[in-house]
Amino acid sequence: MSNIKVSIIIPVYNGELYLRSCLDAVVGQTLKDIQIIIINDGSTDGTAQICKEYLDDPRVSYYYKENEGLAAARADGITHAVGEYIGFVDADDWPEPEMFEEMYNASAECNADVAWCNKIFGENGHRTSAELAPGVYNRERIVHEILPIHMAYIGKFGDKRVISWSNGRRIYKRSFIEENGIAFDRRFRRSQDLQFTFECMLKANCFRCLSDRYLYHVRIVPNSLARGYTKNMWPLYIPLIERLYRDVEDFKEIDLVPQMHLRAFFFVVECMENEMKPTCPNDKETRVRLIREIMEHPICERFYGQIPVEKLNPLYREYYRLIHEKKPAQILSFTEKYKRRQKFKTKYARPVANFITEGPVIGDIYKAVRGKKK
Image (cartoon, rainbow, N blue to C red; front, side, top):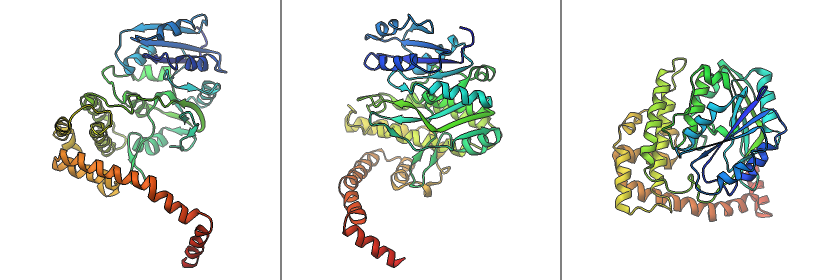
């Protein structure tokens, strides 16, 4: 295993449905000097059988462990990595054939600590907009252009925005993470990638951004964790939020605490909205109780008065007010009404507006009138 350029870690739990397409894409990379580490995180389906089909390739190694979650599986994968860089692929996603060759070459060219590419989302090949301009970011640019918006920022329409913290789109210099003692926190079961990627950026001296290269495919899996109801979601987030607060308080180059307040607020809203998902099994009384428990946590008091509320859209402004006033039942009723209004706009109002402004004849008249007014 000498001269390995990239160690690719693939954690998998009950992934038999899409695992072969993932492994075929990784084995078929144009970069041949790779190490492929499969971590079976306690699967109970046919995952183990599929993994063993690939062991004829000397670059592939396979490890079984009791189920602990993605963070622990990735942490275990790192202990087996010998490559100059380390990358990650989720078992239901897949990389373009040239992904790791492009990312390695771009990283080696500037001795990057971290490199990042863009993604292709879903089976229809939707390409996400670039969150960062492509290029090489030195320490000064990382501190002043990336870190202030890395965890959360408010978009131009008052919406929640973030630089994606997915590890599937990054590679990390192995010596960099080892020398800085950066590791996945095995306790985390939600948004565990954020802790690792954020701590890497706090320490990185060179970041290579390939936002103009769409090299990683994210599969939309029906009934996935992101779409389904998560039991005890808020308790899963509390230790992550507390750790991130410690990270920003220890960071002295610039003040990142205001951004952390915003991140905590968005996590709180996400946990409340979890109780409004169609797959939520709880009755109204239980949902109100769980939302109240979130509202009464000290984390909510911590961010109150520290967020630029005037920049938020109406939905988030109302969430903010109701959290402070501790009105869980109104959170439920308000959100349901707001979502119904948004659904109506999407289904009826926007198509009508588009027809008026862009359609034949009426659209031409509208544009002509608008032109005269200007």
